[in-house]
Length: 281
Image 1 (tube, rainbow, N blue to C red):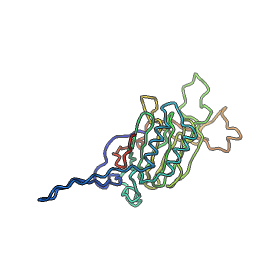
Image 2: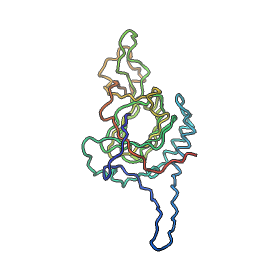
Image 3: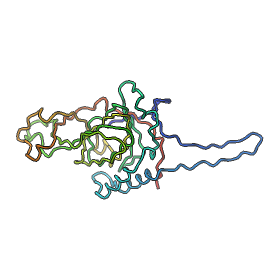
Image 4: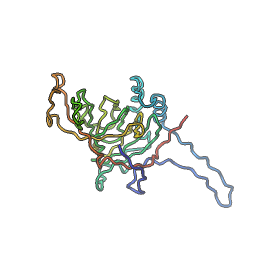
């Protein structure tokens, strides 16, 4: 997904985290100055545990976490709350009656990023959309922290849309529908893999949402993990020729995905992460 780095403006337009209380040195006139100790920031145990587990589990491009490792990270995320990353439902952004001016634009913030994995939060205003896109060579955990959203996802079918090597490549490929449901927080963590689990997905916010994503490895154009976008077409829209579905497959849902240029609503604004900071041990 394409992002645009920036800082949200001051006031009500800014997505705020729960502010940390800061203590300052204060001197009283004609009296001896007294130094007040600064409080030591406390990292929520769940966030720190997530970071340490990701550092252990994600071993770099070309690797997929073992089932036991997937279970470990999923359990941590399942128990995480919005407050663990400095958010709460009382923030102005998450109030459902707040009108959205203009086209709702998605914003994101990065908690941590390295070559092997990244921890990000995506903020979707009501009716905001992250269009259908893929995650090449990546394992992604998604935890809906706040809000209600519709998620639709696909995996590529085993068949190819073109068996004639002399013909130009076809941009439409057959894909199997994996999910087409509405999710409300709190809910279980979803996991997608390089070729399974709904690697190609879209998010549509019904109410203002916050989604915590763990991506391993993160997107990287230099390493060939750029993001591609797709347009859906009903299965019946195009003849399938020799690729007719088997009896077992006829009960499944399929569609054609056409790769397209980057949609206008795929651009995002980056904001500073103001929540609890991870401690690198």
